[in-house]
Length: 195
Image 1 (cartoon, rainbow, N blue to C red):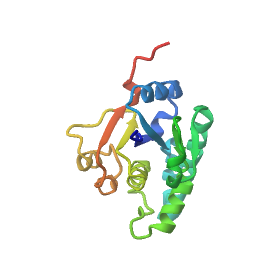
Image 2 (cartoon, helix red, strand yellow):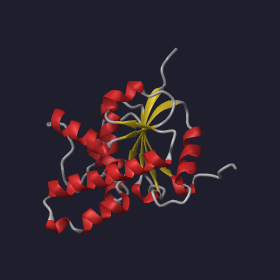
Image 3 (cartoon, rainbow, N blue to C red):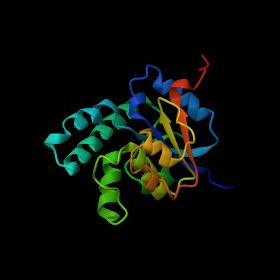
Image 4 (cartoon, rainbow, N blue to C red):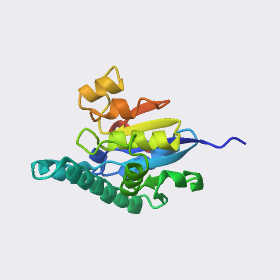
């Protein structure tokens, strides 16, 4: 029996204040083909607070504070989606069985920074959770990367065009170039939910 593929799903920070995010996320996941699902949570408003003070920080300091914002959001999502598992690193992917797993952005980025210095993501504002999710998908050998956002992408949905339009971060075209498949989903428009 062939094992299911791996799907990395970036849950955009703009979705974290969505009133029915946990239920909508569950409904969306249930409608997908079988896969090992790894969730990467965006920085949202917490990262925006760091961005507002970036003039006071070095790029590296701001980058790691934004990672801490992602970590706090990942912990919140983990507490909210009670069936989810916590994933400290990509090496644990093979231990996931059934339920979605939420990746620790802090642990993942520390590992990537320390172990893959030449291929690691740059520590600057060109990199956000979009590129971090793409990097996680690359290292996990994912079959697919899905970016769940609050808006549909502008057409044509190429990484270069989306970066130029601000739909994804500036580094995303490079971070995603080795990925087999990328999907962009407006989760706010997904539905209807069944009671």
